[in-house]
Length: 469
Image (cartoon, rainbow, N blue to C red; front, side, top):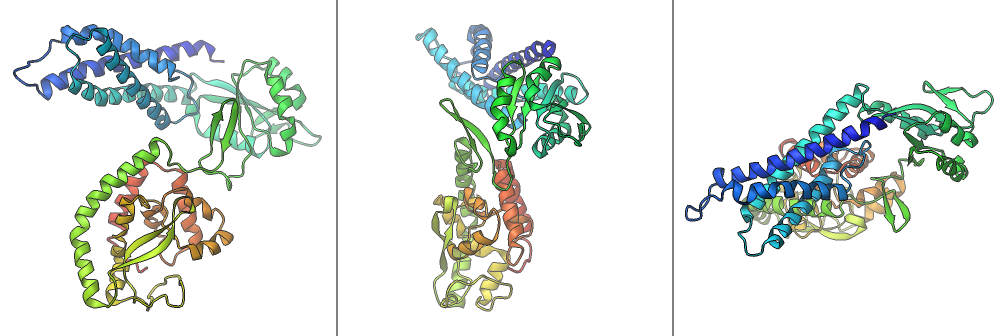
């Protein structure tokens, strides 16, 4: 339906990328040599000396690398965030290539300033993401208003197929316009589902698409019809449509699903931690930097609390308690002692409101969550994170995992000092099921910006509150 527009869209993306590179290159020159300033003894290198002659090569190199890294493939079903992540990776590959070309072109000539390269890395990434994002936003607006749309058909008409249709209708920016379902029609069944005709039977899939060609076909057969899958895929071999599989999965079993390839074998991951690759490095780096700052700020208050504990009750300052974290690994979590030393002489007991095992100072520390400040030591050791599901004791996990659905999914993220459930008020004697639901929601939607928002909400909504826990 929209083949005539594909080259125009591709041209817009290439033009936007070329403009972004040129603007960033010239803008970085101005920032580095006129705004930041240079050593007076060295002077400002002329723009025409090296930077202008290199610009066409720089633009061409970027566009070639972006093409090789598949930044010009259709991305209708991807978010702006995922595309921006790919853009940043490709951009830094291009920077490395430019540095290599500069050094190999003429080993004896004056090289591009390293500070210029550093400036360009920041400015270029920002400009490129902005220009590419602007094109994506314009395309989404046009698609939502009926322009640059692609026709689609859905093989299957069951629950999964109808959920897919609803998702496509609720997200017009994808540019997908569904025209019909293809499925077996039994006597007495409606000829339409959700306002779209159901064409059939499945055995005629190839003939139907030959008569009514579409740009994309979504195969959303129920598991009860899985034996028909090979038949349908063989029929689709006769079409030029894009083909996408939509497996019928119970969301109860899926968390951050993802498809990868191992040689020629596609693998669908139903449950995995979001902390892999760059995500793991970013979250750990954030924990180390912010955790160090928090330790420096909290050092004084922690010393004062330690002295008060020693003065008000006999026993150690810190309390070590066995907890379960990422992937079910156990570790010793550190807290300020808030109870008498023999509080658990009869075994682990779930803490409750107005617990008579607490010391007078311990009640205040628990109420203000100051007893959790030593968790920062666990964060620095890598056993915990600043944000994540609160870790539980092994003795209680054996009970909870048998009673509460999805309970073990919370162990696919490193345990945290605070979490999404805590800022929503599920602390202490509150619904454990609701707490788990919020933990799972956090893992499915994790991002660094979400961690930052949770930390901010913790400081202003939890530590400054007077909840009894």
